[in-house]
Length: 295
Image (cartoon, rainbow, N blue to C red):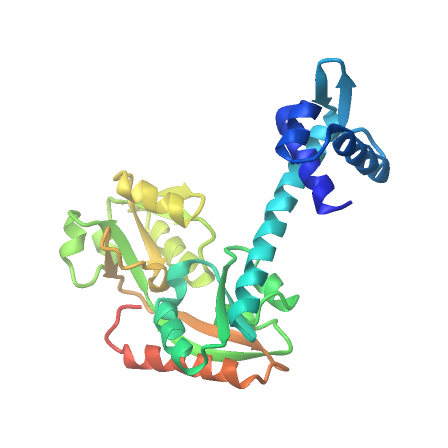
């Protein structure tokens, strides 16, 4: 199956007219029809039903074109990335992180690194759920993770980055936003958003608060849903400081507890590239210098 045949198939599925689809692809109708026929012979089933009025998708064809469209978009992006890379860079370092704000100083590190290694590209890759699996498969060079997630990882080197505390997130006009530190008793009578894939340390704090019987709770599917509920004044929530985007939309108040999160970067043991070590050094230095920065 060629990329032209893929494009022809997607276009015919869009127009359901052989003449119009061929015209849009700048080929003759016989050539267009022949390529569609070759594609169907290769995959072993009919994508289109032909009629005097044009064409219609078969049930199998509708599903096939749906997957084909996604595959074509992925291929287009891969080609564009390859073109960008080949034009300027000799090497690349990919870093997997769950959300953009997890490594707050990443943009600054990228800017600094560009001055020392302009021919090496830093490629962030956002994988909210499958970052560890992708890293283990070799899809990425660097993984942002919590230290607790690295205990079962083999053939990797763990680099300590920073310690992140637990914060209460509330509306900026919430009375709790005026406090320098929120305690358990401050939450009595309030509704706490819980769940959403919370790390183990955060779950422990949530369970401890709920066990008092003095705090209502509401299950939330994920962090974005939780923030939407906080914005809608349905409650407040606790979250790791590394999720703070520092946009100022919400108040992030330190919560009085012993639990925290050890945030680390993982690299593959056999990756000894000098550029990688330089990039890690820049990131670590930025975090060491940001002693007073809320994390």
